[in-house]
Length: 476
Image 1 (cartoon, rainbow, N blue to C red):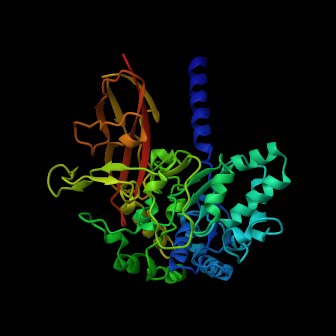
Image 2: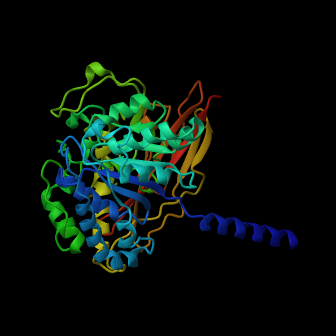
């Protein structure tokens, strides 16, 4: 009896500790050339709706090649004030939403100067000093810098760190930085990469925006349904009938939310692992290498196009065959069309993150009972498995639930580009059931394979969450 009691007590303590430990939020500071294009306003509205799950540490108004001599912090404050009006209703869906007053204190200003003209001795700003201040906090979590315009405010922070800190301290602070830039929108981006070769930096270099991975957020893709990026969809699901925050969401001018990919990977959706851009997620997939300068294209701005001097996290290619729905019998099957390029790494998730945005806009005006909330995927085993070459193993979504009591749809698939084993491992049975059996390929060296569980509810709009299972395959 004593042994049984001990085991029960141990299980209770273990389970309590497992559930009591909250997921650490990712920290982010935003650099935005807001008012250069309506898309910064669009992106900021979306970001505030995820402030319950992402810790926003600063929103800094900056310049860019499209807005060289002025900044617009007042536009940031206007959006935050609209957020304040819907905050009471958002808090009914999640009490973790910060109040508007907290965000107003985080609005900072960079210099109203373009690019490297704003970097050097005597060029500190409220924004550049703030980045250094946050880095100096007693917090070991990475600090993401999400760059929606020019990056010279960060360049000045780095200049100050390099010139005022001892080498060991400077290295420690810079090691905490993670940068995701929406291409190069001033001449300080390549300067940063050349002068700080160890800095974690995600970017599609140059200014040929159409070939950049991030542009897939609003790119019309032939032969798929593009409804969730249409102007009609935005009007119905975001702009109209969703309170004062949605009413501020501007019509698309050049492209919908071109800056949003710079932080989408920070959302804790079960798929995103921002420290591993090569694993893929809502913000796209990126690999670490030095781009071939001869293949870079000039896109029309006067941002200099220079060779990279070191490896950066940049564009990667996915080969993707969508699943389509059947009206009868098995509910999903693979399409006959396959897509392959760097844009695929982002748009393959687009319907999921657009529906997620629409649901959160509903939270601005609807009660908890009348709105939809994302499902809670679970696994009947570890997120990391080790199997022998050629062995059959199980993947199981046991314990998955939905907070609204909605029916759940399951989908399992191999993501070959994310692991070391690059050949597709097919699930020979139906992929849309809770538990599937997979036969490991025969390998002659240790390999890894990533399997993704996508769970989707049948609420309105339909919402998806994921689990990633990393399988290590050992040779016999």
